Image (cartoon, rainbow, N blue to C red; front, side, top):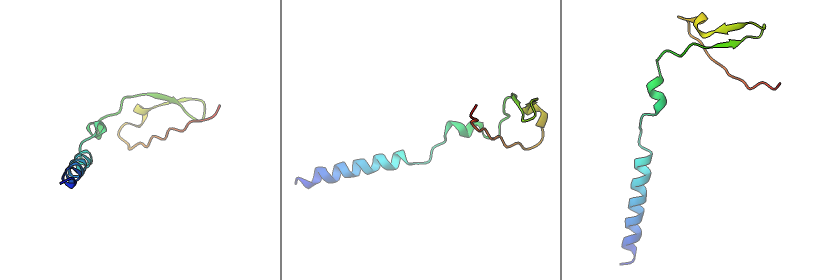
Length: 68
């Protein structure tokens, strides 16, 4: 009779794990496909470039922490 609570607690624990691992939408999913806000960054030549300069073309943004 002592093994029943062990199996019950194991079943409860597994149900929690399966519930937590079920597929759910993340907050970032609602941003996929939306327009990014415009911003300006310094370019390698000392000027500035804006995201709106590339409107209509695919853009890959790569942010790298530079030392300096």
